[in-house]
Length: 102
Image (cartoon, rainbow, N blue to C red; front, side, top):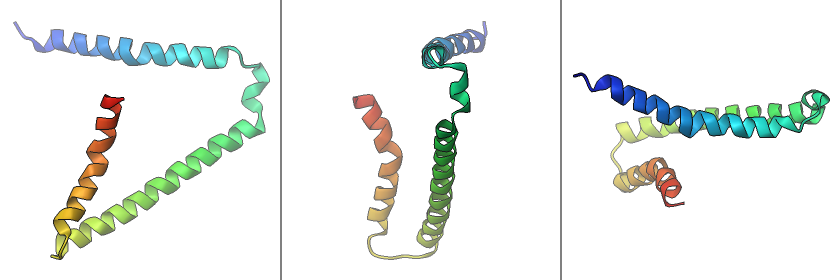
């Protein structure tokens, strides 16, 4: 018997119950009490636009600085390179550890 199909069903059940159901319950609670004109509020859309601008700016800065640092570290040998690699690696696994510990 192929175990892939039951494992896939378990995975999708977990995703639906563990993510989508709470997400839609919270979304329903958030928008249930709003008046119909709340989505046309200029402050809401100004805040949404500001959030997108900050996210795009942050992503661009991260991509350019990360690419430059990666090229620099790949092409040069210098003292402290291994320490810099460790510092860069910490930023990837530390948020996961903090989520698990919290």
